Amino acid sequence: MENIEFMSSKERIQYIHLFRGVAILFIVMSHLIWSTGDHPEIKRSIRLILSNSTIFFLIISGFLFEHLSNNYKPAPYIIKKIKFILLPYIFCSIPIIVFLLIRSPEQNLSTQALNYLFTGSHLGPFWYIPVIMAFFLISPLIIFLKQFKIFQVALIFTLLYSIISKRPESYNVIYNLTYYFVFFHLGIVMALHRNTIEKWFGQKIILAMMSVAWVIIYFSLVNNASFAPLRTIQLILLGFILMNICYHINDWYLIKSLSLLAEYSFGIYFLHQYIINALAIIVSKFGINYQNLFYSIIIYPIVLLVSIFLIYTTKQIVGQKTSRYFVGS
Image 1 (tube, rainbow, N blue to C red):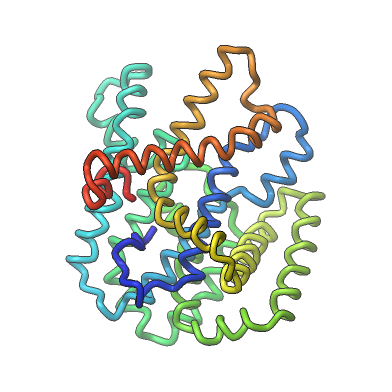
Image 2 (cartoon, rainbow, N blue to C red; image 1 turned 60 degrees about the vertical axis):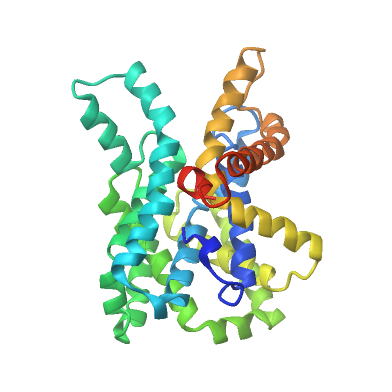
């Protein structure tokens, strides 16, 4: 994730900013819809839309990486990422790592803790942070390669690789880096051709064609959810459609709401799984099934509001700037 709070208003691209707000809505809901429990077919249909929506953050990160690349300097860039991504990741990881070390200690606790941090395996959504940090660490190589025309042509091959490959089920950072590179790569190429992309956004026929293609692929997956190649195409199409919709948003209240979500998205990403897990433990004690679809729908806005409240409270306690070191927002 790029930290949008460090962009000037001139640098910020509104539809990308709003798309980030939409992306965090998808991500939080994706972690609330369980694959088990009641209404399995409805849940499967919903999960086909939401699952793996973290790739939207990768597209955004690639887009902003290119957008801001004129001012790129390796050392300051990576140091900033360490300060505003790695540090809050470590801080937000402490509670769950301490819990896991106490509950399931291994022979070497230091190695166990470091393994959690290097893989993100200690809390569901945290797999993304080691992967995006790996992208940032190889950013000098990406800057070097993208000066060649072949870099853009290579998108065809990275896309083909992710289409024919299955989403990694492990926490192997190298494997994840290889598989997810296409989305970061796609974001860069989209930014390089921003004028063309925005012209496409202005043509309703493009949105209609993309939407029809997405619907066809979606219902194909409903009938055969294991068909991995279509899944990657569906995700990319959905990302483009959502970005297109964000490009046309002009309602003041909607802009303000999505903008707030975008600004708090990093913090929400770090905190929401804690809140989901805590609420699941609480309701279980009252005999409520937290895997129930109705429960997930009801609890969804509560998870978002509690996340925002905790981020806001952190800002009030430690200050607007310092809070970025703790919760990333």
